[in-house]
Image (cartoon, rainbow, N blue to C red; front, side):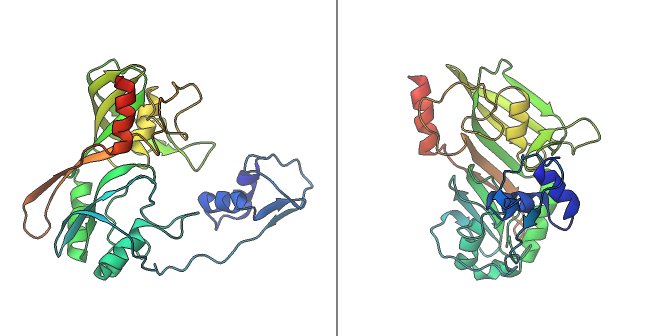
Length: 293
């Protein structure tokens, strides 16, 4: 049996993500040697696991520059750069957007969960773009309700591998945990995942790549990345879902070629619809320039 699966059976109180983080940190030894998660156990080995105390629930403020687009007493809209983690998780205890938000607006400390204050929705570490944060409990509840009703508009720009033939389309495929790699997500058979719906429209076809506009009707983990990979058109720069057979990039993209470009929601206090747009960042424009040339 794989080491990570064997550990999951023996230590059910620890999540698979935490177990994998312990393995990658060298805190799991088999017969005294550090092994990888995929290492196979034959039987008779001595497995030792060093489990450090969990990180404190209280998030420590960390002052950092924020690209704020809009802010009032209720909500805050900002542009997240690629490479920044939204909230603490396995392997990312410090340097998060949540800690920077707590330093900028201490009142968000009591909004939402203690480790993700004010965070209504999130973006992957290597995805850039627009994000809305609630500064009060009333605003948080209202925005979460809008997301549940699918009335929040979220549109993304994505550079994907290959030539997407249809000018537009809808990907309606359930998403759940990968059956063999619990860190990843995957398209699953009916009844084994949660419904996920992504719409796409071709903006430009380039040599070996396509520029798409994506819109989300649901908000599953890694939804756009998983859906596009399932079509055979993974997001450029995606080493997790990109597969092995990919056209080489003409220039490094420094993250995922995925950017949250448009965001619209109803203001929780005024009832007015707020709309925001964010142009593709320099790292994606640089990739597009190389592809066009």
